[in-house]
Image (tube, rainbow, N blue to C red):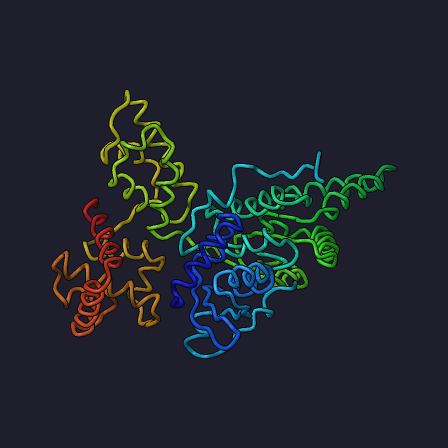
Length: 452
């Protein structure tokens, strides 16, 4: 039995021993890359996999692999860069290691199952699942940051709901504003004879929990006394190995007027960002949102692409656009959903439109939306792969689909000469011939151009 077949047999067995979400998160992207002496080497996608598999799944892995091979093996988990460069990455440097009638404030609609994952949020989602499976043991605190409307609250509440469903741990979800309101009430009643009891209730609410989830922590800035109280709460929970999960619209180091000691503590665990969704993820979200709607079979692809192209940075706005189109179709006596109808329904909703002076700029905007880079990036001299690839794709589209001349393309892309443009176009030509995925991706962007 070769390595691939051996691992397929292993995965089939372990899939029946754990939950679907655990399998998809921790095992579906693993690969057996070698058997040396008594050690099985397995490649994993992220350091969080390496840490979690070795600490929390090792017994079931060794037992199941023994069933497949008839031999006892030890396991070594390696990242792709470790395999390629023969180095070792120390995952220990990241992170330190009944509820009846208890109010969690959780919304049961938020779960990992209905959280749509793409490139922009995959690491955050994987880290969240790791914390949910082993609260207080993996990454503490878990600090999730990113612009509003990208799903931070969904992910945090999914952690809480998973913990409540699979354990007897006490979970409290709270917004920073609620925390501040509770704290202000203590201060207001400072001279009250019952203040001791109020203070006791406050501390019990926030410290007698196993998992504290606090949303929008950036709102605590400027409230010096409240920062002191949260500092004390954080220390009490952390020292008792209770899980702390925090969200913000920016990283800890970028929160102005936040006490340095809090910034330090927020960086003790794992800090993960959620980026705006790329075009593919936005399309997946749209498909997921309409899958149970009675009009889903009448929702054309070009309308989906129109909405996905205009809602580039806020998932809530994307959901609102869908609701608006469905409502408009109903109001218009059950009219068919068409691109013209959607354009009319959303004409006042998309307040920010792509303003382009020519076709090349239209291509730039669409490519930037797909790859989450800026037009300035495409025009810049920067040569990192995350910018070079979209720049060359944009040049390729301008040349092959718009038939623009090389000199004009070069001028629009920051004053590059025609030889540079030709090189970029030829490079993408070769990649398209080899990759159906890239070919499909480019075709989707070209289809968007036709809508302008």
